[in-house]
Image (tube, rainbow, N blue to C red):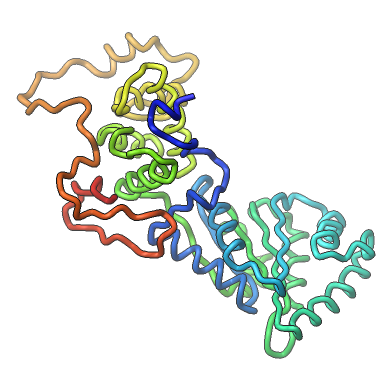
Length: 340
């Protein structure tokens, strides 16, 4: 709908984990390296922790794609809210052992033989569990026992657990101390700060074919960061709705007022306003009561459409999201919008 209006080839803010839109700031780059090392080395259990919407699943898919080998086998469990019997049923299918279906004993015997054969041939086996904070205590124990499958020199199963902050809290339970002791690699994903929020928005727009500086103004990006608190999923939702609103109003670049209206519709706080509630007073009353007019201070006039990438020099070379280089952050943070 809005693609041609903003010069886009495709939607830049879809919520699917498309590796083409992979964006790596230093924290995400470290997390990706940790996942890849955990998948490719016979170490034991690897843990990735992050708030909802920080990009854990996207990084997980990127790591799995990067570590694909003919002699490696990975099983990914996206919904671990299972009873132990169902857990082993899924594993038997995922690891190509259908003849063991319905019996935990038959599965474990066949699985260990399969692991040893693959290890002797130089291959690896990994079990990846997303949304691991939903695991039952019983499944934590079953997974711990799988982690015990080993030779004198190597673990036979690489276990990768990806989950939200609640997972870290659960692992501090004394009843899971044995499981926690087996975690060899651990990393976390924090939300983006203002600088990296701007870079994230610009990177996705550029991959989708747009001139990022002609889509959002500087103030619009500041409002997006304020409302999203740097959570990439929320950033994407706000930007998607702002593009629709900008197209409907035939306005570009999108300014702060459009983002503010979108955030109010999404019940997100911005400009010091709390999220909208059904019982809230009408907007006119709210503005009159909560935001009284203040004496005007002399301010230099600024064009409403001032671009947030307005740089007259060409020293800031565009950087693709998939490049493995890191752009240094200058001391003058007002130049964050010259990142690309």
